[in-house]
Length: 227
Image (cartoon, rainbow, N blue to C red):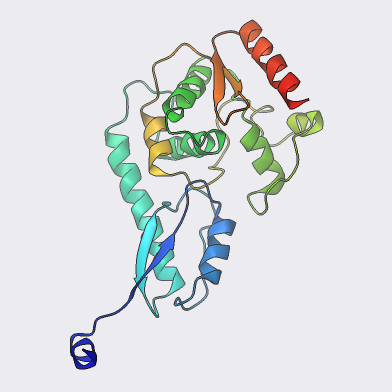
């Protein structure tokens, strides 16, 4: 058996998994902790360029080779998805699509909700409404370097930043994380809905509404549950 392994060069296949919604800094920390890889990792300057997935490698492979595979995987999947996008979307190019997908990724972890959340944001973009997405405010504070381990304050929401979608209209200038395939598909094929608002329901999902009065009632319920 030993001779067979030596003659045929069989290697142990190792696994490296990148979860959806991780920032570059979080992926870098995982890479540095992974045994069997070599070299120093050089990460992209911007978020949203690495495809979350499980990657297989052999002992001695470089960290940069894995980053390159993540980068190539994201470019390929984005190109394929862009060709299958819904017509008349208020996003002009692949860059805007990945920005929207990154926001969707951070807003909900429920697969059944992604296209619906995308539909809300697409409706807001069409109406020139502010997206008012909490994860963009968190990113404006942390820049993806650390987790914001506190609730957002009114001051946070009112602080000027190109990434604060309570402050700006439209999309921020770049992605806020590395979204997975499902979030990217949702951004390019949103649910056809007339909903404009959503708020957490306290059970891991969200309650959606079509107008501000209905939304305010849902927000009030959410605050009462928190208390």
